[in-house]
Image 1 (cartoon, rainbow over the protein chains, first blue to last red):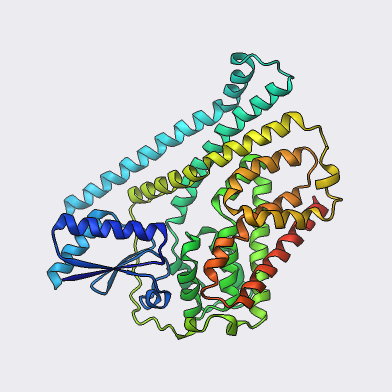
Image 2: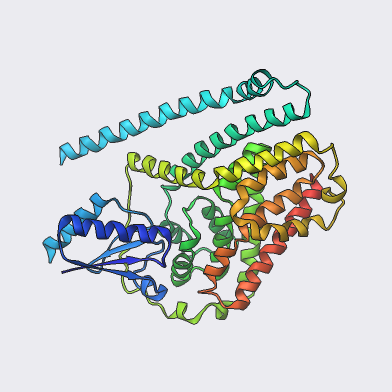
Length: 83
Length: 348
């Protein structure tokens, strides 16, 4: 199962990224857990400087912007292949 | 792979064409705003040329489309330009820079690096963690919100490029000096302890280079978002400004907001703090006040307080800064803004 983390302290953009993640998971019909990481110490462990950040299986795929559902689909597909 | 490349290439060309078309339409609209406003106020609605209501209306019909056009066009340009900068890149440029040069570079990069106050904490930690001095970090954190795109465009649209440039230069100067002052105070112990304990365990910063098509799409999104947030304030502000323009007698404000009213600068700064979200609506009113005798330095100080001393950013920064450092940060910034206000009132 994939683990998706949305890094960000609850700003509007972070919620948007979380929604996109949920939508893509449903559309792809895969099983994945979406975790919201709001603690700064935990966020900073990923060494990112702008939120929202998106992490798939502990790998950072995007920071500081809202990725498109198409991008997220590609990342999830790649992650599934490497599992 | 080749097909994909060609596809991207076509997308970029289409995006450039769309932007060029939009630019042409923009220029055409911008040039008919004045005749259109006069026609609307004097011919269609039939107000006499010198009547107070007619003058106020012409002013309103001219300023509203002009400012909205300027905001849309310039914010689009600025956000496109900003897509070439990132906080990660800025941090890399600031690494190993000394006091002074580092502060100047940080303040300048604060103007062009994309910044949102909700990202202030990761940015702060990211800077401090990589060894950038506290003072240099503060220069960035002061310049980034103060010299924002809406403030610059409003100043440009209402007062011209000289005032907008003056605002930008003084904003950078305040950020540099306040940063150096805070740096000299050796306040590292006033940063919340957890910040120093964070060890970034993954050095996998990702570099993202968007294509032109994507830069333009993103810039268009931000423009819609920003203009969508401020347009109503702009219209209300211009309506009040137009009323002042037509009805308040010349130099009525010299006594209370002129150069010689010494208390007007600090009063403007204090008034500005709670108004952070309404910068766009307040500027047109300030513009009309200047016309009636208020001093420009007072108005610039007011503008800086409105956008630079932002309450939400201060609250967010409290999570990484102890109360004493927050207080010093606010006090240094306030002093800088008040001095700048006086300075402009003296030299202009």
